[in-house]
Image 1: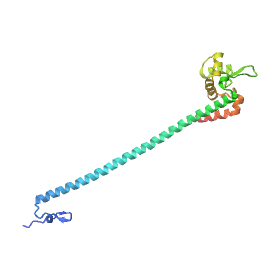
Image 2: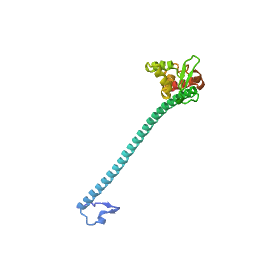
Image 3: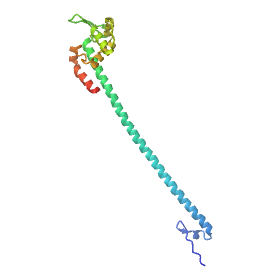
Image 4: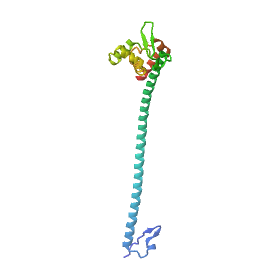
Amino acid sequence: MKHKAIKVFFHGERLRDIYPHASKWQVFKWKVRKFIRKVTIVSIACAALYGAFVVGSKSFHETAYQAQAEKITTVEVQVDNLSEKIAQIKAEAVEGIRKCESAGHPESDGIIIFDSNAKASIGSFQFQKTTVQHYMKVLYGKDITPKEAVLIALDEAKAGELASDIIFETPGGGLKDWYTCANKIGLANTIAIVKKLEK
């Protein structure tokens, strides 16, 4: 009974040509080792491809997240810039009134000028006592004495804060209180711009 020849090749050469006396068991072991090598190589290749996919996917998601975070940050910065711009416009308007009313006199001069109505206009913003008392009540609900009104009018920082609130927090905007200077610096237009920006 003839045995069928086993044709096993290694690098293009028959195994029996390389190892003429190899037994069936040796051939079987060689086949198993060859199969295991192939499985190992394929497994490593698949693992490498999967790793590359995971890293790429993670990188993509991180990039997308960073881009979204940058958009959010940009929006927040724009909002902050708007608030700063509004504050700057308000400060410039108040400073315009102060410069106009004080006519170049510093706070230390303690300016007191008597108007045609025989009432004294006091400090850098030329407040009258009754005006300070009125707005302290309207804006802050405080009743103050005439002396306290004079001290506020002479304090440039406190008078400036009060002037800012009168201009931007009351219906009249102080246009009548500083009639000449308000017209001179275009205060009505500034108030309209600020109200539009704050909406």
